[in-house]
Length: 117
Image 1 (spheres, rainbow, N blue to C red):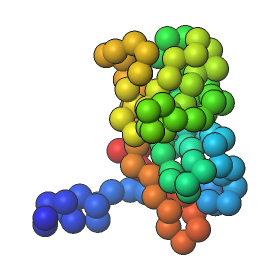
Image 2: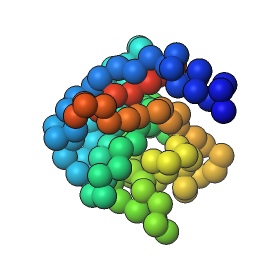
Image 3: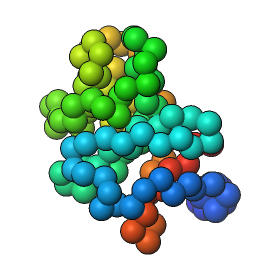
Image 4: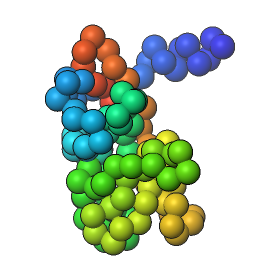
């Protein structure tokens, strides 16, 4: 438990927007530590952060994708070629073993914060 606590204390968090700026079921893109990150707020209020780059097209567009669920799992569907990516694991649900990176995200004092490394 101590190692986990130390890791959390040394994590660098970057504020990206206020919680109320993130509309439910819509994404936003933020540049954190040189990484384009797609940040999402779902209808239930949960926050998710994944890499913004669509691995199939190479375009930085996942933040503009359609947010929904598949079998109860929150997903975003790429606007380019329509592959679905889990917001929990980053896994492409249509073409394994393709995965986009996921990032820790939290709510702190009304601000959405992301850690990219």
